Length: 309
Ligand SMILES: O=P(O)(O)OC[C@@]1(O)O[C@H](CO)[C@@H](O)[C@@H]1O
Image (cartoon, rainbow, N blue to C red):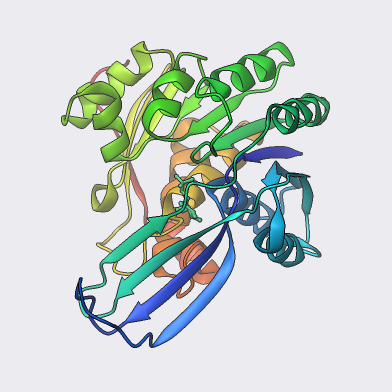
């Protein structure tokens, strides 16, 4: 199975408003509520593609119960989330229907105790024994050490399991030093990590910091991959309009799907770019439009960059 780690699970609430004006009241036109946190989204997309997937991390309180209920019965998905005394966070995304812009408010998450963190690490080590790959995704809840991802990556490497890291801020800076096989930053995270706003330079720099391969999501410009086998850019056939929430998680799912099937990099990038684009086109944040995915798989272009990395 593929293992996804969602240390900071969330109940994602999306509000649609005709136009967002800070400092005023709004009538919400439409609300959706769904289980989230990056690792949960990745797990759901992999399961929808037919991969056996196990999600671990933390959950607690009323929101945690809702999250667990929503994951129960999802085909191909096993819930190995560890209960904690705190309460799973909510995230709120407000979609301005006029401009299409999305504003996000992400709560910090429950405080994790030392005992809960130790319990998680035991569960994680046990799960690695049957994992073909592991994705470590999202922010760290308070109480989890900032170097957590580096440690989890090292444990996976000792177990012979390839890793993909997708996080931000200090967790990313420290995590990359653990030498993940794949790092998946967006343009902002890449710039924050390396101090460079030039994507190719920043992606190469991120590799030098410890990542085996770096696949950067550059929004409408598609993906830039710098790997030991070469460099590629991948992009959907035309610009897409919709809600980008979860598009990066679908990208991660596409990369993992190709990795566990030992597909060459260009194939992995086609899957990743098509899934990511099909998520932007789906009406509910974090889900993907299956028909669009199948169509986009034939429309994504992958081009090799001039020289090998
Ligand atoms: O606060 P984090 O962990 O960085 O991001 C959390 C989050 O915004 O990311 C997902 C979209 O990628 C949402 O499902 C989720 O709630």
